[in-house]
Length: 237
Image (tube, rainbow, N blue to C red; front, top):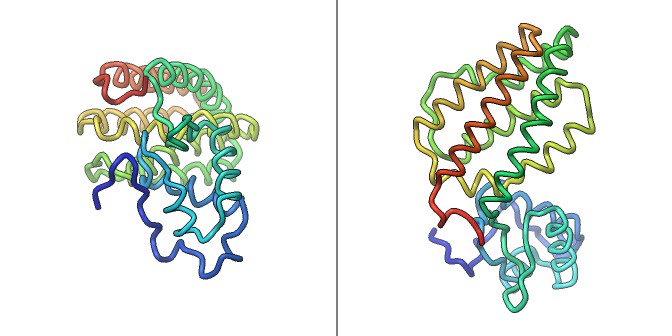
């Protein structure tokens, strides 16, 4: 299905409520829209059409507009006068700044995780969470790759044992960031990222906080370089 800038894709059948009462809360609408962005149903820069969404979600405009306000506060959408709600498209500067902040926070998380895996339960959970990175199947620029990437980075922060760090890093890892870049990633970019993920994991499992921190910093620094080298059309203004 081809989407235009002003079209809203229909929700999958199993995501649609059977009656307005089921989907009549703001929380439900927020969840559906956020999941749509995470799963690529709504693309960066796409306008979220109120008429389409009220029909598909079976809600009135009031809950939908409140959901828009919440998602705007999270940085996932932007409200543009005379156009309505659009899935946020980051500028190059915004993207670079987010990567810089993430680099510092995730370097800290990696150092803490390297200490945390001394606990057998933390280690077992970390190993289970990162298991997909040891799969040698080639990765494609796809939703599956984005999901694996998010899960790996979440696993590091979870192993750090710092709940506030997990909350902050998830806020900074805006879904629109990866979906905005995914179409421009090459196979060699993804292969290099996977190799770096494995190096980070080995350092954490070895309990080497200094090496884990260094590997994470280098990994995110390379990601910034890839983003900065992408064409202007990828970014917002």
